Length: 255
Ligand code: PEP
Image 1: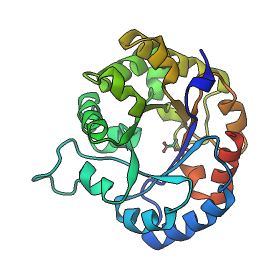
Image 2: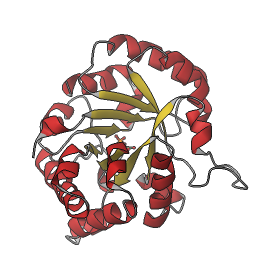
Image 3: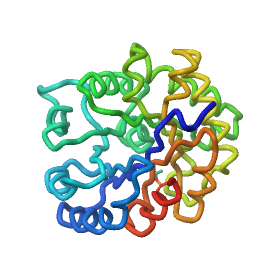
């Protein structure tokens, strides 16, 4: 496997944090600090209500805009939802789907992740597809089965040429927002399992070219070790993406 064949992407997930004004002052500080960091993709996935103002603030910067979800239909009677065309109106490039908080609190299932994925990449956006096991599943020794199943269902009917717009984020649920991180070896091992699933579904070239991030309490202190691993091609970062110094330190660790 060859890390040079794929792009490292560091993406922040702001979750339900930051008003539009707070988001703009945050990215104004961040873009100054990271303006010369060009060896990895940098993304901020913001609440929909922040899109317009943050998109303006990011113009002419090396930071890309992302969303935290998108509906699988292009329009219609779906109260409270956001379509990919609405996101594209603000130059959004990335959309997180299947985040464990969506699965836990909003009824997201593997098949709906697959429907979202096909609409997102079909519209030319890039998707960050989250997979990961619960603590109970880890303790039962079924991490491999869970992440393999989630990855396979998410990728159902996704064509080989569309895989260039798919990022997988391995996010063990027990590590999200808890301060507990998978060891770098374990993150590398599970990311390698996911890469193997992609190889089985497609081929070795596609597997080697797919960005597979780790997410789960990644921070300024542990990022370097995690990101040094062969199969860890970046991070999806929650808490530490809300502090510009910490997020910038993770981006620097990826260089
Ligand atoms: C996340 O929300 O995807 C995440 C990894 O959160 P945290 O970094 O806070 O664990």
